[in-house]
Amino acid sequence: MNIMNIQQGPNHTTTRSTLDYSIVACFTLILLLFILLLDAYEYVAVPGASHARNQLHQGLEDLTGMEIMTKQELAQLKLEVEQAKSVVHDKKQEVEEIVEKVELMEHELKPETVPITVEEQKEEKEKEEAIVEKTVEHELGIDKWCGSCKWKNMGFSCDKRVSWLIERYHIEQLEAKEASLDQGCQTRRNLRET
Image 1 (cartoon, one colour):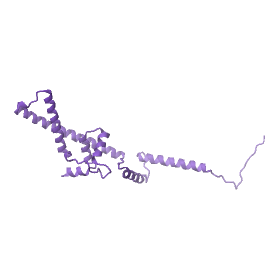
Image 2 (image 1 turned 45 degrees about the horizontal axis):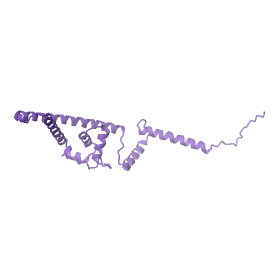
Image 3 (image 1 turned 90 degrees about the vertical axis):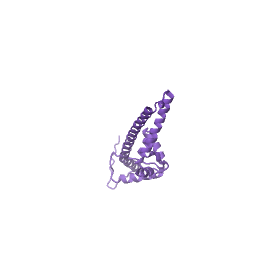
């Protein structure tokens, strides 16, 4: 058996293949994308990446007409939806109490107006609900809702925004409209200020 000892001379240089450079470049690119992904989900903060992310978000928003929201914005939206639910609930209770008092007074003054049959009771209940709904809409300024105005000057209307809120948060239309007031409906904001 013949063993050869190969020694490299002083003039010999090690060269890297194209494959080696490609592997290093791919690994670097994957690492960079991973860091940017973590930055996008706000797990890490990369200096300068927020400006690039904001530009990307703005470009996507302009292109799609949709709004990209951060975790803080989503938390704020949830808070506003909960506040709207509370406002609508409180207003409904207030109006229902007033309607009940008026009905009691009416029945005391005119005993013949008291519903006797189940159908009459059901009919009166539906009338009460309609009165409460209309009164709450009026009290909150929702009765002047146009819906066709642009939400935050985006590519969709306030009605589309309300539909999205209803679908996303499983809330009533009144609550969704109330939540939209301070978020971006220019027409409703102007109506409420007057």
